Length: 120
Image (cartoon, rainbow, N blue to C red; front, side, top):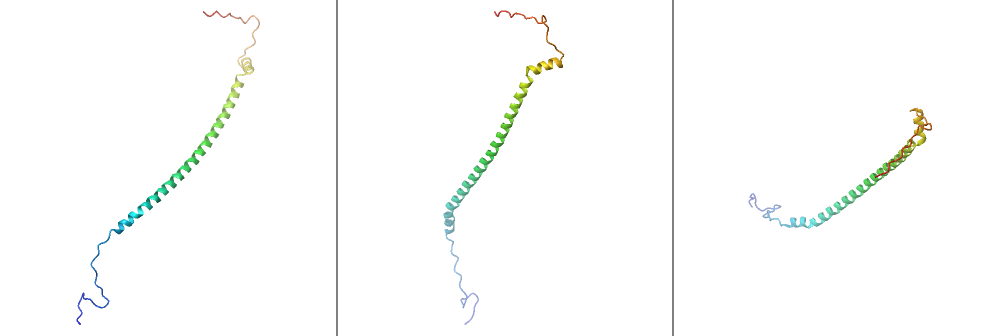
C-alpha cells in the first residue's frame, strides 16, 4: 500500500474542523459577578468599620488632650485670681505708697470733704 502524505494511517488522527466556541465562558463570568460584588461589599463594610474605629480612637485621644489643656487653664486661672487678689490688697497698696512713693498719713485739717451736689 502506498503511503501518502496526509493520508490516514496508524496513529494519525484526522483533525476535526474547528468548533466555534460556545458563549459559556461569558455566562461563567456573569455567574461570578454577584459573588464578586458581595465580596467587595463585605470588604467595603470592613474598611468602613476599621476607619470608624480608628476615627473614634483618634477623637478619644484629642478629647483627653483637650481635657488636660482645660485643667491646666483652670489651674492657671485660679493662680491668676489669687495673684490679682494679693496685688489689690489694701495693705500692699499702703505699703507701696509709704515705702516707694514716700506718702504719709494726712494730718487733721489736710483732708477737706466736699459735699456732693444734688443731681438735677
